[in-house]
Length: 154
Image (tube, rainbow, N blue to C red):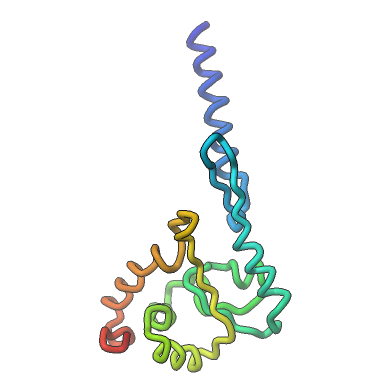
């Protein structure tokens, strides 16, 4: 009987953990604070809504690995959409994100970019942001696509 009760509690616990981990949409994040408080981070949804409402339908948005979020939620063309078959194109976007302002501006003009979306989560501890989390990928691209991403260009 005790074993049955423990197995029931385990199943209930697993269901609760899974539902809290997977029930939130990916663009609305939730964090737990001290004392059991829950904080809802709605910045992604608000940014995509702003892009949708305040930019031309044919605008091109440059961002780093937002996957389909820009095109799906904001209904705008993206330059990097999780399609990794063209490493030199991804490296070029990464080069623009890691370059000086002058060099980045030239690259963005060549790519016909209208807007740039940069995600920074340092103030809230969001580790999946473009600034603190993605520069390792940029370095990897630099090494693997030397002809596109040279150190002296950054």
